[in-house]
Image (cartoon, rainbow over all chains, first blue to last red; front, side, top):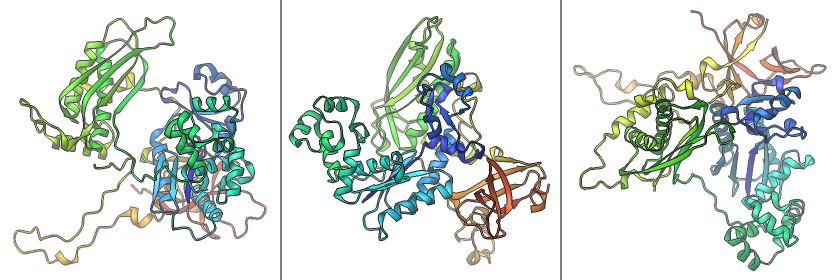
Length: 422
Length: 122
């Protein structure tokens, strides 16, 4: 059996752990740059008269009027809280698959002796007791069914965040409850396709002939069909796959016009992605840089462009990558525009031990030890403590707006939760 | 293919195993008696993933020997016994109390047990 544990409105829950004055009240978390809402708790979701998916500037007044508390995203906090939750889940089984920041599969094969419902309840209670973050637990024989059980645990009140599908009778009941949109991995296109032939529930989907599913929905649909029927065919993965590409792009806190400032942001992003690249022991062959203006603005002149450069010898050296990115940026930058965003993508990733040199350059030309020292220093003293001088010291001038970010309660000694009393 | 362990915050293992004496003259008589030095994380924190630190501002809790600027170590995993110092939430506000023998008549949520009070005396 497989358990799927999913934190309830995770980002909002993390914020609420440290803000008991907000317990039971509507809370939302904003995207990078405070552009729009990316997470809302149950109380906020209940306010259906607010268009939560609209840009923040359109709904801010409404949120304030309805006493919805909003936070800029605090990924440092969410990441640390996530790690705590996952560590606790690891005490339940040696085999867990961390699927995302707030959900994990637990392989229960051969480890559960108590009734499953009791076990699921224990997982739920332990996580919320230890971390303050509430979770829902779904248990079933396959991943897709476990995911569905999890959904039911949250959506159907009487389950109270624990749902076990361990008999065929329960499975069919769950499938009849679930609409096609409730099935994990069943995309919008397939939902529409199924609707056309009169299939609305997951149960109806499983009653289709396999040949039809295979023909119309490829192997992906077939896998879902089988999983929903209780036949496990999505493997359990304990480790993430190495990434094929690493990139980042974030909007500036304010629009930028001059090249030096954009170069600084670009260099900063390179230092971020290069660190990830080294952590997974890969080297990049291509580097892509793109810039764009604010396409939502009616008054700004619009421009966007991108440039890809092939690095002669694949590398994960921050300085070479910064140099190449700068070259690419200079090629596409045009003065006279108000830029909103610069982004970098590293692709053609290969394991670092497979890097080939060429006639003129050997892959060991640049010393790896320098990068190791830089990574160690930044790990010890905080992000971007040392790096390329091109990053500059004016990060504050283009950095993301995170006006309403909570403190980093769990990672910074100076940011501890403060209990005021008189 | 080597896989990366993503997202894990790893603590460095303490390096205190006995090694070959580094003294150039007499070998150290302590060689076989070495032990890891004291690590407060190990001594003061029982449930790492359930432990939080909070800072107090104000002298309102001096009756509990909790003073202004003290840092409390809070363990959320412990189930408090009567008399234990606990951080509770009552009507949305943090309070410190001795956990009552019976909590009839009062309604509150335990946020966590206060295991240590760190007071800076400088």
